[in-house]
Length: 435
Ligand SMILES: *Cc1c(COP(=O)(O)O)cnc(C)c1O
Image (cartoon, rainbow, N blue to C red; front, side, top):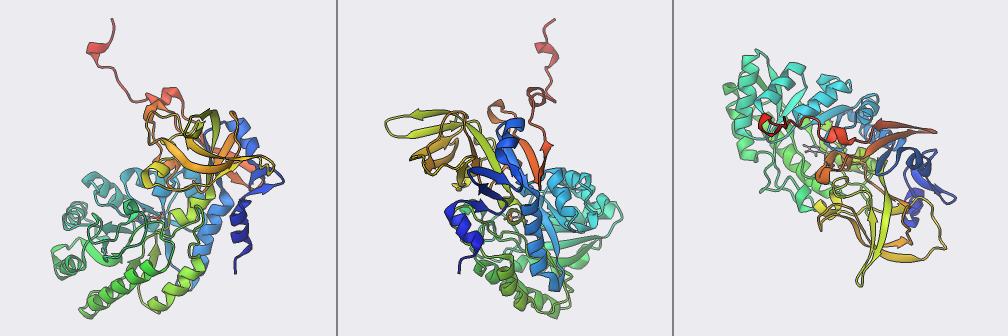
């Protein structure tokens, strides 16, 4: 049976805390139009409640095993969002020294930070060890050696998890599938086993965890279960050989609603996973990114021109691929809602495109929308994850502002970039300086 939320999503009148009241689009208790009028466009608008609620859903579903939920901050690393989740008890999953810096600035307890990624530099490893993070998720034998050498030079004992690649196809977009055998991520099980056998060669490391992250926007439990089964068999054989496993990190990857997906809920996910895990001794870690913030944000952009050609209607808007690259990078779909819903208006088919000088600069193609006019703002839904965090200054476009809504209030949590900020750090060499 479809839930109330599912029905409302289908009718296009609500997605979590983004909904129509009368004609007007709201985020929590704030009219989106009001934010747009004071902050301008393009602007990312986040619902504090939706974001925190998604964290809580996962924490609640797995409460019987008290997992450590490390929000994968590459999905959206705004300090206000990090702080919102840290306040709920979340740890963070980081993938760079810059993310470590942000995590610490947001006040994250280093003992709740896990660090993944195939290309950690020596400097980044050193910063993370000095900060006292919980675990490195190690992706190759040379990286293991590098972490060991840095740990040794700092006279520290460092915990590591081995990221294994279970060879599972997550049935998602090729660019976000990470657990297939040909992927650059993780270690195959034989290599991982060989590391345990040789663990004495790494006296400064405590190799005590297994990490697996098979991809992103996975909407059914099946790939997770397949991966988990393989990993549990692997762990059982390691334990038989006397290697203690203290952490099992199941990564992220839970899918969300972009158009008509029906992703598994946190409860359904827990119901499938928990029986397999039973009463194991290791601590479970999750690294959800998209699941926490994806449906918690929208991008509002303004229509600059409506251009009709013999083939198409183009709505040319003031946000481009530099603001939201997902449609062109992953062929992803974002629902587009008007700020004022008017059932009486005609519907037309539009390509919604940005101002950037690239044919790939589109936000939606062949989309049925309520007739749009120049000057009108439009909201792109489900833009909270991999939206702002993937944005750039291409075409010398200042990056968008970000706003966090909480109840009746809203807060600018990132100012719109200025032109001056665009050239910050650039230097003119002396031979080019005019006398
Ligand atoms: C990106 C990433 C995540 C988060 O993925 P989502 O699909 O956003 O949940 C988790 N773990 C690792 C190692 C990642 O690279």
